[in-house]
Length: 94
Image (cartoon, rainbow, N blue to C red):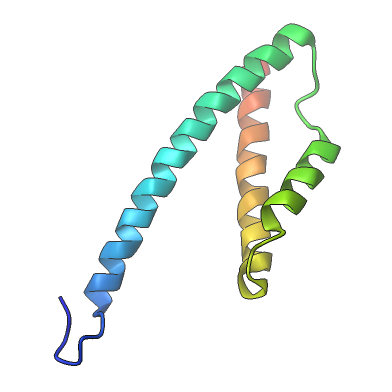
């Protein structure tokens, strides 16, 4: 719903956020399914859960083109995803 000046309403923006949240959920579930596979491969090979060099390179690669105003928040977002992934792998290892 747009107001008479053709601007988006709060409801419009929230609907767009809901769509992005749904896409993030799907991406998260796909990522975790892949983390499941990583955990299995590492367990079979006796690999460590945490690889600081890979994590650093990943963050650098993914943040290289992020707008400066979002970069700090995006790094926090990535680090949280990585922490969740590491925690999940540790739980899988038993």
